[in-house]
Amino acid sequence: MERTPGLRADATRNRAKILRAARDLITAHGPQIGMDEIARSAGVAVGTLYRHFPTKNALVNAIMIEIEAGVVAGLEEAVARIEAGGGALREIELLLHRLAVDLADDRAMRAVATRIGAYSPDNVRLHGEVALARMVAAAHAAGALRPDVTPEDLGLLIGTMPGAEMPEPARRRWVELTLRSITPSPAQDGTPS
Image 1 (tube, rainbow, N blue to C red):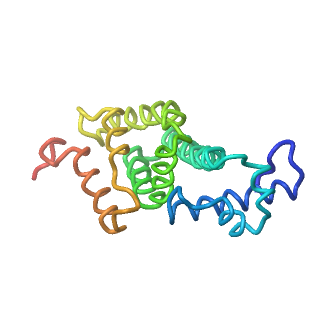
Image 2 (cartoon, helix red, strand yellow):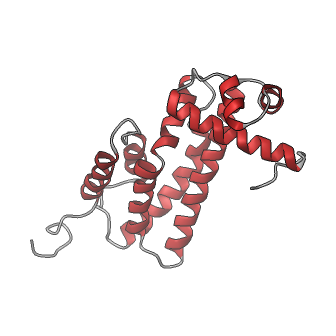
């Protein structure tokens, strides 16, 4: 657990417990979940919760900053693997799978945060656009994407992917169909069909 600057170790632990409990409860029950319930689930007093997060918006915003940091770190790691010789299309596939399947609950959390006005998706968009552009350029250089696919196209696909309300097998199928739509068909890449 990373220590938050300026907080004692016990305060850092309490903050982490509050964030984890809030993330689970808000994802499962929506934004109407009470701060009392979040405190109880985290095993802290309500006053402790309010010392860290004076409003639900502040709490949800902190969760989204945590989620964003994970997404940005994942994008940067993917670009680093590509630059070290890894396959760009494989990294795009892993990204789509991670976002559509593994992080579906985080995407549900983002929808809640946007609904209650605690979060603007523009916060992570800038980092994402740069990383997607580098991934798409590398995939084009390898001939792994259709020539007309742009970073904006990939961003559009990511922005419209199914969320946690869709069963996991359907989200996995979405990834498969999306990859088929952005990769060259055998006739396009010069191999016989």
